[in-house]
Length: 213
Image (cartoon, rainbow, N blue to C red; front, top):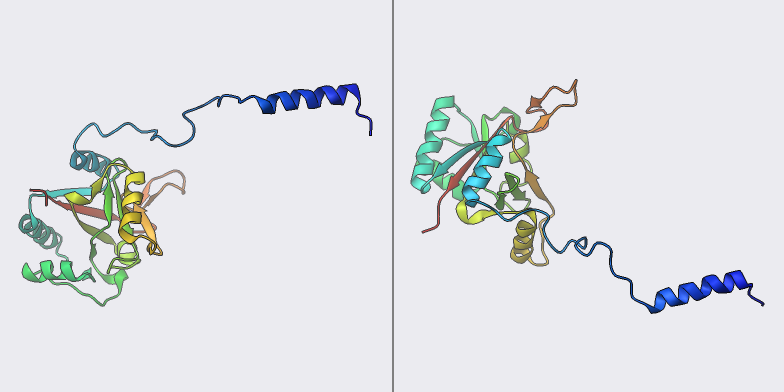
């Protein structure tokens, strides 16, 4: 089959192009580097600022004893009677400090639910939780008020770092659910008016315990 001069010219240009490497026009677009700057302040401060800007309520505690005192004061101040908790370690803290809790109850009728977390993301003010926790999938979502007990060694700056730590922790057995909760539930779907607590807790507390010597 005879090739026309015009077609031969096109094929020649294609062969020349393929024989020479063309520089990538945007060498920094491969996603190997973070688009965000490194943290400019301590992660505790970064998280507290982002979390409170998202209507979260942040409590810093120098140790577990102070955390228990602060938690007890919060429960008494709000006159909460039904605190829902499934996690053994947190139950021990509640029992030691005479805070009544329920491990089997209707979440919709409890005053607050307490959970731990996997990690805290400082840059976004997010709580990372998973189905591998004793609290399961529901406590942080269906409780009208979510209280999260976290420790300073669970703080990471960005999501990428957090996901890497979870992969290292669980290896080939990642939890079936990993969720990022960023402040209380809120929506502005109706007439662009912000409403809090529609699809989840109306208040979210993080008690951050300093466990770094």
